[in-house]
Image (cartoon, rainbow, N blue to C red):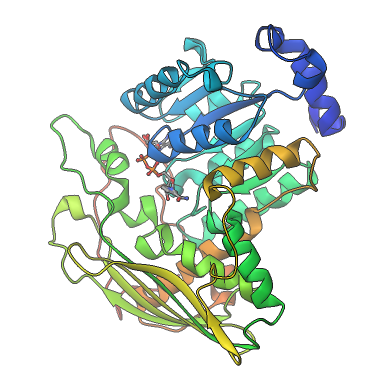
Length: 418
Ligand SMILES: NC(=O)c1ccc[n+]([C@@H]2O[C@H](COP(=O)([O-])OP(=O)(O)OC[C@H]3O[C@@H](n4cnc5c(N)ncnc54)[C@H](O)[C@@H]3O)[C@@H](O)[C@H]2O)c1
C-alpha cells in the first residue's frame, strides 16, 4: 500500500494540499478551509470528458483540474482550449490550472497521467480500454469517476470487478456516470417503489429507441487504428454495440429496483438499415430482449439506433397496485450529471459514507452484454454463462501500424457463445 493510503483520507488531503497548493490557496479563503483541494486528471478529452470535468467544477469547491490525457493531440487541445476559455469566468478561475507538462498524448498517455499527483481520475474514453485503465488507476491509488459502460466483453467486466474490489480495500472512492442513479427524481421514486408504492413488482419494460450517435468518414492518412478509435461508436470491440453503450442506462434502473441482475435472457435483433460500409462498422442496429430475474419477473428491453424513426427512451415497472416510470414520484434538485461529482467529492472528504458505485455499473454492463450475446448467437444465455465466459473481443495489442479489420457482422446460428 502506498504511503498515501496508510493515512486517513482526510489526513492525506490536508498534507498534500498544504505541501503543493500554496499557489491555489493564495488570496483565497483562509487556508484551513482550503486544505481539501483535490486535483483532477481527465483521461479521454472528448465531449463527455470535458462535460464531466465541468460538472465536477460546477458542483464542488476546492477542486482543480491539472492534467489531461488523450490518444489524439487535437482532441486534447480542443478540450484544453474550452477549459482555458472558462477561466474568464471567476467561478472557474482557480479551478483550472493545466501546465503543458501535464498534458499527455498517445496510447500510453493514461499511464503518464496516473504517475502525476492527481487525486481524482475522470475516465471518459470509449469503453474498450476502461478495465485496463481503471485497474491501473486503482493500482496508482486514485479516486475514480468513470463513465459507463465499463467494458465491452465478459473478460473486461470481470477485470473491472476485481479493480472495484481492490478500490474498496484501498478506501478509494468510485463513482460512475450512470446519471439516473444520481437523479433525485429517480432516487425518491425507486425508494417508494421498493417500499411498496405500486405493490409487488410483476414486470418491467425499458426502451432506448434513438438514432445513431455518430458515424465518421475515414480521412486520408488515418491508419486503421486511428479510424477505429475516432469512429469508435461503430465497432463492437470499441463500443460494445448500442445495447451495451447506451441501453445500459435503462437496464441499470430495473437492476437497481430489483436489487439484483437477471439470471437469464432470450434475445433477438439485427441490422435493418445500415449499409455494409466500413463507416457503419459491424454493429447491429436493433435488439429485443426478454430478461428474467431470480423471482420470475420479466424485463422486456428494446434498444435500437434507427435514424428518422420514432425516438423513445424510458423505464417502466408494473406492480400489483399500479405502475411507475421510475422517476415520477420525486423531483430533481440538482442536475444528475453534477450530483455524481458532488457525491464523489463529499465521500472523498469523509462528509458522507464511503462511496463505491463500481460493482452496480459492472453488473448492469454485464446484463447488457448478456442480452447482446443472446441476440448474436440466437441462444438463451445465463448469468452463470457470462461469469464463466472467456470472451474477450478487444485486440491484445494496439499499434498504429497494424490492421484492424471490421467484422464479421454477427449472424445468429453462426456466432458462437465463448
Ligand atoms: N453518462 C452519459 O450520459 C454519457 C453521455 C455521453 C457519453 N458518455 C460516455 O462517455 C464515453 C465517451 O463518450 P464521448 O461522447 O465523450 O466520446 P468522444 O469521442 O467525444 O470522446 C472520447 C475521447 O476518448 C479518447 N480516447 C479514445 N481511446 C483512448 C485511450 N485509449 N486513451 C485515452 N483517450 C482515448 C478519444 O480520442 C476522445 O477524445 C463513452 O463511454 C460514452 O458512453 C456518457
